[in-house]
Length: 250
Length: 329
Picture (cartoon, rainbow over the protein chains, first blue to last red):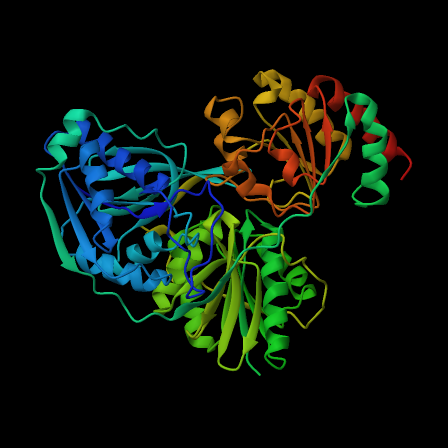
């Protein structure tokens, strides 16, 4: 099988972000970057299929400046076979512009399966996978948490609010990956060494014209400092009083 | 003056609350643009047409009803084709969807069909001449972006629970329509929708959310959380990632960066330390209560009210007190 996985380099979220001088981007100084978690699970999903069918080839694609090569190498060190960087100065917010660039590349690859993470935490928009599928005219199942592939067909599970969907689809298809599908493998030392020699092609990204633009970024208002009402079960009456009279939620 | 389209999410023959929120948001957009009409699309199996009047009550001037035996489950391709066709022919200023599991699937597909971009998880919107300007959380809610949408129609998906469904009765003229493609010919088929725990409130829609963490020590101790939820009567139960990773609760219950985002009126964190990835899923809750035995737990920094103590003592006492308080209402 030929499998593609689209991955994004994202900052670690466990920090206090600062707004950059341009007011429309986050100040990247001091931030740590890695592959988006959902995309790592997407890579794992592809590698699991390759584990079962050694003849498979897994291609990892990332759009962005040269630093995304680190992210591609990470996926290669996990076991993917080759990488493609779609070179762009920066990754726009506009999901359609990104989907146009990715689908222009993906349509030439003859892939049986194309994986995406269901969203990335930085832009938090979660639209690139299904938009790419539409542009490619391929069947698409989003946010899958279980997957089985048989000859030419697949079955996936999707988590809904308080329910699950069981979905059948034909190949080739686009799938976006939710948490719960798998646990991403860690690169082995051997994998890291091997990744250095794997092919990584660089091509210009054919980004579409953006239709949505970030006008400004702001930090949300801090929550008012909370208070500890008391200790142990003895504090319950006072908590209930506050919920009734102050917060008015009881 | 411009007309606005709303996609009304359904499950089976039920209209979901987020569907009514989409109609309410579309009504607000129509009013802000000088008083156009709201046209709502509702798809479902036989019986769904009975819900058209309800959609009119929430501000739809026209309700396009697509009732088909092949739509017992959500059909992404039928919904995409039918919504895209309607939006194309209607010349709408904007199209409003929901940022639910279904809306996250559908809105980007429809937008791509229309050749326009889409912004999901929209917190609020304004109209500035030819541009619709929305607010959208980024970096797990630690940054709020103001985004200008030049595309026409502007396709947006509202975050659940930010706009309360408001009754604003309009004519609700019913137009019966056919799906743009026969559901039987769709390539992607939802063969089954498994309802989890019949009748229970969903996390995204419940006014009260009680969530449990590792401090509960074992899966069976979630009974404490469930008892507190039933004392409220309008509460849903959630969990931290640590708990769902350990299999104490299903992944669909996880509140956090990689799980569900909730913003209820009242959030009660039971035995939750407050890891950043959890806070990302609940920090926009109106009132936050935390019970944890560690007085230095980060959850106390975001909690409006905290009790430092053993959850096994505090929660049963709180459950009893809430039952008592509810009795007097």
